[in-house]
Length: 179
Image (cartoon, rainbow, N blue to C red; front, side, top):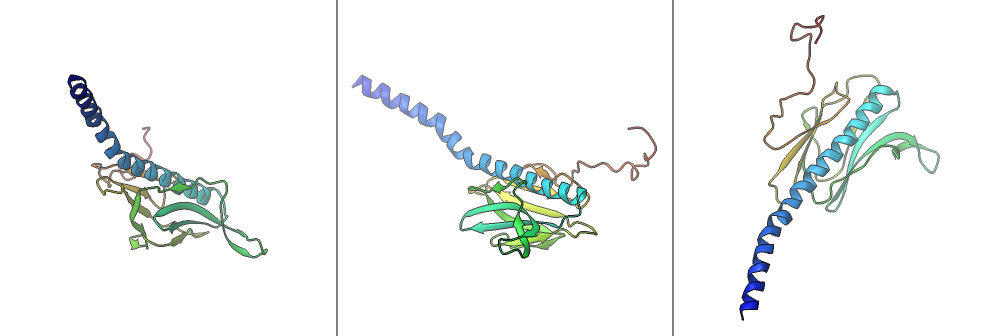
């Protein structure tokens, strides 16, 4: 009888240690998805700033699985000009994370369905913001790519979305000073 009580106590302690890890897994999944989405957006921004090739960001949902990918203007199997997946760019698998909102220059995109944001060949690239949450909607991450940036950033829970990684030295009156 004593052995059974000891085993039950040990199992209770182990369960108490494991439950927080299991619960926090979805938050890690959302963070991983947000970082992967930032890599895709960064690849698109670099491609846009370094080449004249037409690029676009496409996000496609198949049921509950989401994929964020870079597409480019290319040639399809029939030899026609069409948007094709860029095999050299990373893909972001959302997994159990949910894209709850997507904005292109403050215009709401269909985050539950499909959308494509094309970058103009000559002209200003749109500002992009994706809001990614874990499946329990406890943690929210924002992925932000401004029109002038070549790297997207992930705004973690509790951080200000207004904090920018870019410092405009001219706006601060330090255009000619060493920084």
